[in-house]
Image (cartoon, rainbow, N blue to C red; front, side):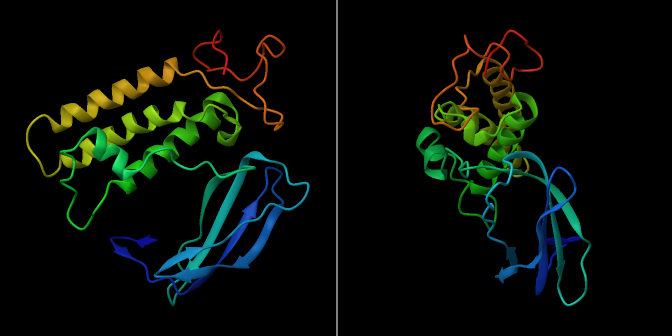
Length: 212
């Protein structure tokens, strides 16, 4: 966690998870702190509703109380891991080893891109990311958006067409997202729903003829 321009030395704190009704799914409990990083391992209780609408609340201190902050959360049956690694990026683009000072990989950009994609699945498809069965579809989407983020940061310390490449990759991502078709398991039975039986499944808001 950063406080202003400095990284905070987290000493202790609590974590709270608020459900869509405003009640505590997890009451304020102590976090574990390692190397100035606060963590809390969450295990859904029996009967907890999966999906969006939850809110995390982190109350931390570094010897003095830091501002309490909240962020939206999604409760999933399985954690949706990023389908891309730094080595995948390098295998596709061998010259992209000019990492920013202090970094040895593009992991930050990959995770940032993956967080954006997860948010888009929730906001636009109205489904949990772990309900997508053909997860390989995410790989190219994550690659394109990660490259956009990578070239954006490279543009701050390299010359040439780097900024243009960032815009090109972002546009390619937008186009690929519009064409993506995701097989959904909306009832968590491990099988894709039949669009002929479920013609009103979650659809892209800008294309009501598109079935996810």
